[in-house]
Image (cartoon, rainbow, N blue to C red; front, side, top):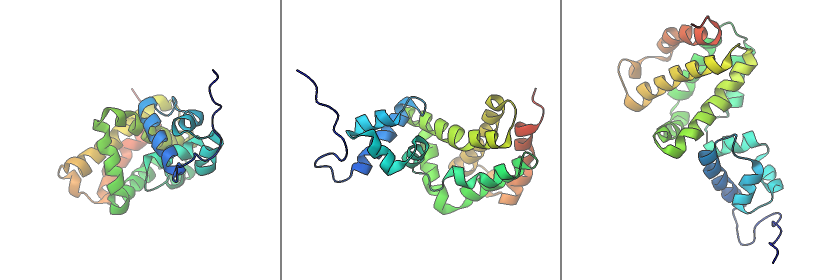
Length: 198
């Protein structure tokens, strides 16, 4: 007995193929991480042809962004940080970070993602989402040396700010103005990005 060939195109009786692809992508990205998930594996899990995944979502990066349900596309909003070059990048990154997180429209869905850190399947998704989709492109665009050491240091600072300021509400961090946040943290981010490391 031979197995049936994979069905191409839209699945019969499934009115929302896009949602099925997205659900399969979320599950696979969460369990296998970005590197361990392929467009082909997402297509197989959703019961569609890989070409249909590309039709709805474009590249694997586009699919990953859609799976995270981010309110902003990090590839777009981080361009000014990169375009300004290495000098002052810490300040531009901190200013952008504060603006995104202080906007209620973007903060609310991002908080749901951050709270997912505490769930086993959420850890890989957040790690891949923040490091791979936000910080690694910034590091590559700035041409920083030793990104495998520098970017986790940047991440530790930014994730720490989010948890203490927006999840726990620790004062005085919770009520600091964006300008104060930038003044306090930008020099540290700049050192992590371009300064000497021990």
